[in-house]
Image (cartoon, rainbow, N blue to C red; front, side, top):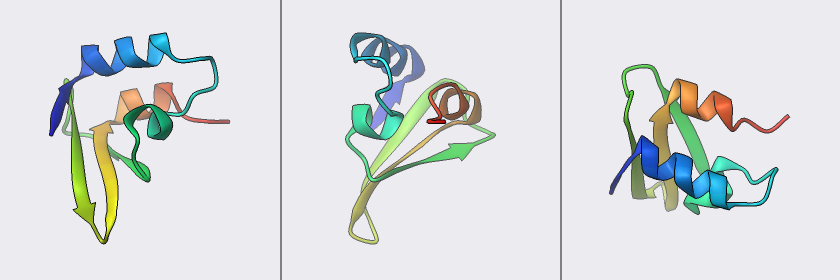
Length: 65
């Protein structure tokens, strides 16, 4: 599944402060990709887990301290 970055930004804006990108996307882990710029890919079964691949800047913006 692919989500536009704008859709993910809206999703995060609707969540309570402190919500992680993983929680919002309902994935085990979000991996950063330097080559992605405007889409987030969600993969349902990677080693039995649901993961996402997001642009590096987006992952960093919502990185938990």
